[in-house]
Image (cartoon, rainbow, N blue to C red; front, side, top):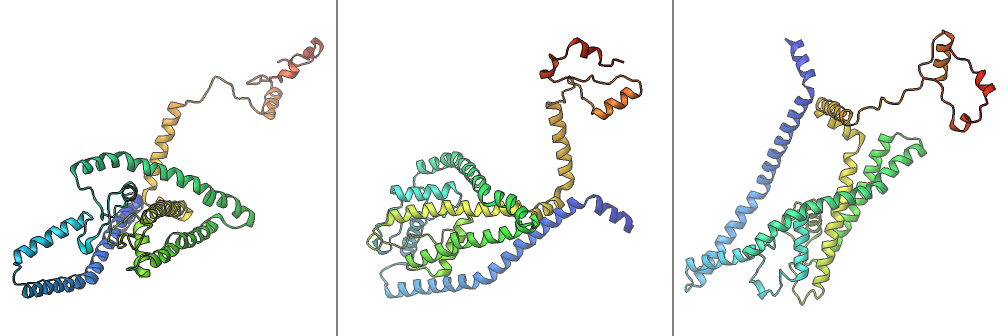
Length: 347
């Protein structure tokens, strides 16, 4: 029985490894959900109790306002806030001027999608659908081309040059290269920008700034922190330039993250690990691909295969004729006279 199970496990090892991978991912999701629930649920309950107490105090101090009217006002205010319109402090900030719209299109096409600004009209929602159908694949194609061009400089050339020059293992150098690249990327697109946002955004601490950079560049885009949303026109007279710089940062930072991820994927260790989950399928795919190529490009049998000189000599010594006669170079073909031709042995 044990031998049968061992044979079955060996024959279906890639499928079993893949099943284990799926189960591990499911467990990881459950663990994350449990931790988030344990951390955030008490804060939610506390905030809900505080809001309820504030509502009761407001109604007690303002007896002329009914509970139904207050709830109607709050519901309308929350609905408008979900569309990016706030009545707090008589905000004059515009969500749909040109620079804000440019910031919105960049978040849509890069699939970041903060959700702080959304189309209000039916025409805008319909255009967003058609605009994204074309724009998202186009953006992904542009990013893939740009990432591959950058990887030639930052990944492929170093991996092809330095291991041979320094006489080190290519696999070990690749791991060290990824580690150095990760540190540089962390400083360039996460740590330093987080310090900049920490200095510019009055209501953000450093952790919140770092959180915004990470959530944005990984295209999670929760939308709870959006730079420039707390600034009024008077506090930030250069708000449009600020939005433009943030847009450039998001695009360039996303490119850097994709370069790092693609470099990690090309690690020899990662490639060997992936083969554990689909090695048999890959063999079948390779064989099928080879058959397709052979059918589409059959070998050219019209030209004879010329044996080596030693094979021709052995054939002549054994009294046989060479499979393919020797062919003289074109430059010598016309220089032989008849006397030379007679000295050539014929069998």
